[in-house]
Length: 72
Image (cartoon, rainbow, N blue to C red; front, side, top):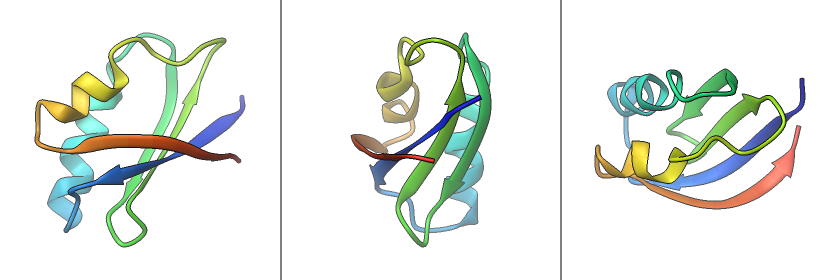
């Protein structure tokens, strides 16, 4: 399953990583999620297409989803 890396602004600690991961994990089609506050990134694996509501899910916690950086 391909994974994609996105820029996320607003994360500053491990607690932020947990919040972002817990917001993204239940979205439909998500198969993998890993947030990294040190690099300000979010790695997401998903079936077929970008999960609907990805940006909104993390915005609810005060984080902003940026552009996709790369496919990993």
